[in-house]
Length: 190
Ligand code: GLN
Image (cartoon, rainbow, N blue to C red; front, side):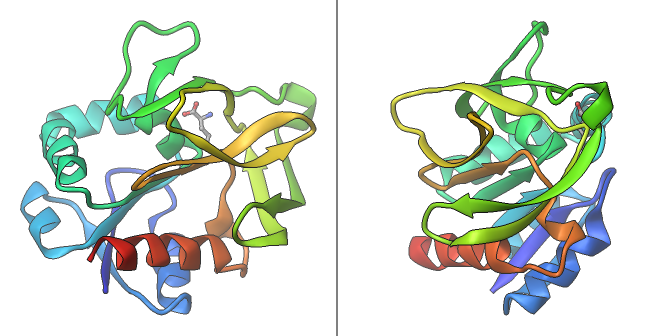
C-alpha cells in the first residue's frame, strides 16, 4: 500500500518513518503526477499559509480535490488539518476546504506553545502519544464529521468519511497507531 506524504514544507521524513512502521510504503510527493500512484496521502504539519501558497504554486489544490473526489483518503496533521478545513477562524481564505470543520489556529496560547500528552482516540486506544506544537483546535464540526479525540474539552482529532484530521503531530513520537488507523481507512476504500 503506497501512502504519499505531501513534501512542500514540514515534517515529511517523520511521517514516512511511521507509515513504514505501520506497514505501508511511504512515498515523498512533490509533483501532482505522483498522486495517480498512491492510495492515500498525508498533509504534514508546518505553516499552513506557506503550505497553502506552495500548493497553489504547484497546482496541488485542484489535484488533491480530485484525489478526494475519487474517495482516496487524506490525513492532515496540525497545519495539514488547517489545510483540510472549510472554515478557518479570522481568515476569508481556505486551502483545500474539503472537511466540514471550523478551526482556530495557534489555539492553545503562548505559554503552552508546545506540549506532549496521551490522548484517548476513539477506535484506536486510550493512550495515543501526541505532540502539540502551536496547534490548531477544531471549534465546530458538521453533521458528517465524527469526533475522535478531545483535549481539555477541545476537539483535536476528527474523521469525515475518507478524511482524517489531527491537531497534533503523531509523527514526532514512536507511536504509529494513528498511521495504522489511516492505513485501515485506505484499505477500506480498496
Ligand atoms: N501554527 C501553524 C499554522 O497555523 C501550525 C503548526 C504546526 O503545524 N505545528 O499553520
